[in-house]
Image 1 (cartoon, protein in one colour):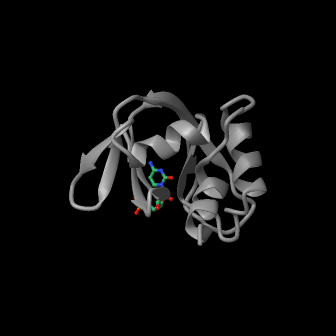
Image 2: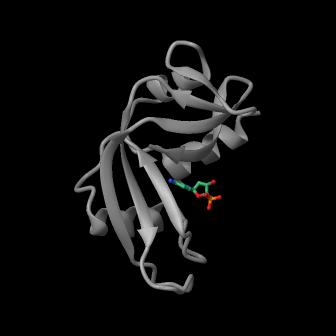
Length: 118
Ligand code: C5P
């Protein structure tokens, strides 16, 4: 069952982003149902599923700590951080766009958790 993979994609995968600014984050966080309550921080990866999945393999990933994998190559990512102190909607976000190595968890060869990027 790839339920956790599909959940990962829903939260963290956006191949063709528009804008990558605060408005992008506000729209995407809502579209992906991450706004009840407002999630504090969420990263969208602008890569292909193939390249993201490859982080779970030697093709594009190396072990990171006990349970995580770090990408060998950087991805374009946009990180959305909640503005203000409240998790109550409406949720307003600050966007940070960049090219970063991602750290994820994999299960049976599929990404299931986004940990961090740097
Ligand atoms: O770091 P923390 O435990 O607060 O992360 C909780 C969740 O926030 C992660 O599972 C991930 O979904 C998301 N996150 C993210 N991008 C980051 C940090 C956290 O998407 N840079």
